[in-house]
Length: 573
Image 1 (tube, rainbow, N blue to C red):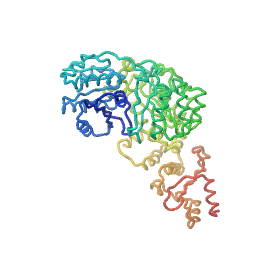
Image 2: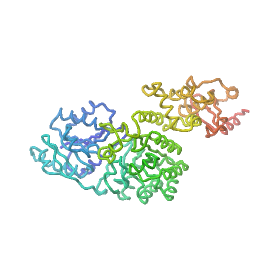
Image 3: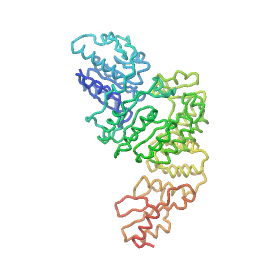
Image 4: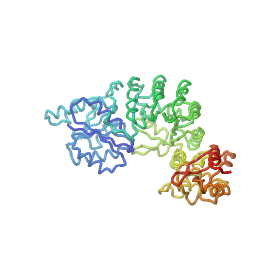
């Protein structure tokens, strides 16, 4: 019997943990099982062709809000082409209305919730009956009443009943040496469950947290290190909910001499002094943290069952920012119950005041099975009836206001989260009282000029600021152009500049160029001295000059002191 465990990931670089768990948990069983991964950017026709050419007896799909439409297309076409091929679904998108989903879609089985044990029993029984030549296998599977399994036969859906949660150490490690993990984001979990009960999150539907044995976790992390995995993302909902467990893992990783990075979702407010001291010892780039702020409005936090104070989060995040060794990603959610536009603006400015490396502006999604969906009417929530079930409006925030926030989200991600426009952003922030207002104005500028709907070059993303500033702020055009030039050349190491950044050389630049004509040291003719700008407080990263050596090397930034050394070495006055 041949089974194809199929993952349709959000991006090519992602890997799917769920299907690997199923394969690992049945690796001792006598059947042909393969994992095949695609992405939602692949052409559906080509994915369908690949699955059909595998000639499987069973195709199993891992279902999420981002791929369910794609999966429905594949399952319906598989059944049209080969009605004898059994289709099995699992995952969060089909676990909370399994009966209705199976009634309305082409397919034969749904696994509800945690799937490892249910899948193993399914494979064992189906394989045994198939090998013995029995007929009417789907009906017989329904008669078995396997816990956690929904079965559809002749249009009627049968349910085997609820299955208890697993012991974590029954679960097999889902990776092996045969996995191609190069250039992939590898997902890993050391625990399941969450101690909190946020209404918008599916983790709140189960209570308690289950952990792997800590020795096992360290051994498995060693596998990733040995195989030179670039990024391991822990999917644990609140990694640091158990201090002893978290510190042991962090200390283990800190003591390794490795290039692998590790991503954790944490609750920053519960970090204590011991943890902060330990994290301060981490090599730069080893860890990156995702911190769910969601809102800084205390009343709104109560509405979603988040018992946290933003000040506590801010204090801990700021302490880690001072260390500058851990990349921090802070999340906000628009459309939460009780939060209006002005309240969200305050939340945005509060989070921005921390200046983390990344700020994600997300929008509330009313997931199947979540408490938030049950309370939608109470808050006047209108949400999309199709995945990802995103909020459209509430009685506190309008559709139009959410549209404005969508524009803010886009320019925030491009200009702030890319970390390529820092000095330019600082310049404009000096003209605004509210960071939100800057990104709002920038988003409206993009919208009114049609920039969201067309592709623009990397250089044009810088040029936008010249046009954006015209008539909007009281700016020194030369100053702004030099700051844009500086940021542009930091991330575009070329020996030329776009026309909009070229200006007449100043006398000092011309003198240096003349003096260096015969010395194989060339000072970039678009010479930048931002010493004056440092005094203004707009840029506080020191004085830089752009130079390059030889004819073929890239432009590089050096300090004024380093330039003095070069000048002295070559006898330049």
